[in-house]
Image (cartoon, each protein chain N blue to C red):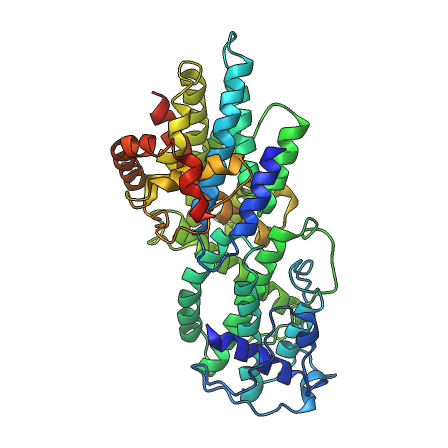
Length: 162
Length: 341
């Protein structure tokens, strides 16, 4: 509940004339979401181990909630709420290997290669398969930016707790 | 940019069916109807009223319709088709080209004005890329330089509008609405409607690929879509793996330390800012109390778009150095924040 309020208010304030760079907004949102969530996790499961999956879940949830302007965040939220197993990144490694092989083999038909790669890219993006190519390419840009910010935030959090 | 409001005014003039005033005026909340003076916008645009032929074009064979997804939620859905109609029906007179450019500018200014709903990250990147696109448009096209840039701006606007719409609406991908993007044929190219559609689509895609190229580090030298796509895929995967790894690390580290998490926020927020703004770190805590004071800090430095390593370096430096100061500023929490609000 608080999260919603926080997100809404933060979005409203970003319209102000002295605008804050969007990366700041995102980072702040993200950390302010994730840290209390982690604390809550800590408190709830103080005896048992904090499961990695639940942490991942919170991480993804914070990402999705911090980036609600983008289409992919909705898909991510859907995925997260439907199943408690975040599968956004687990398939990434296998896809990587496949891409390398494919680009080696298919030398001729360039369009086919491109199609394949675009499809791979679509799989990486949450909800990418349901968008057409142009939109997906646009969303990928946002996604990359948010992922970068997310890694920065996570690194700082990890750095502080060690 | 004051020029943009003028563009909006002139854009209204271009609609032949309503020369007295623009459809936009009633619909567009951002429309400033005060400025009707002709503006020379780097392209020598004239402000002469356009003939009514603008909207009538029965015999155009190179007229292509596109569905550009749902309309802006910030702006009325009727905005887009009119802008596009005005742009698409020209066959090649220079005046019309100018008006296309102006429409595009207006569309762009709409985009810029309605920034609150639009993804700001994306806007920033588009702003960077726009200058590049304009340059490229000038070189690439064989026609009048102005017409070429107008057209690229047109596509740019379409691209922008598509992107902003995608972010906003929930059914942009699937529901075909009434918005069309009109294109006209370039000189020396097939005017078949299908091939035009294909070409526009391809160009949109290549424009976005260009944007992505700037975003992904180390892709500036790569030419060729396949390699570019590979790089993007690898980059996204590596980012996702990084996130996964970090979250795993967080899971192992987390249960041990409880209190330090409170210190993370101010440090994190200060990672790219000046060191002399410790009060900024209190913002998230104020947000918990229901107050957001994110607007009164003009000292923000945007996160550098350089590699993550350099960002991390600054982060660590910031974090370790400003730690005592942020800790000291914790207690007078409420007192300090009031002026910020």
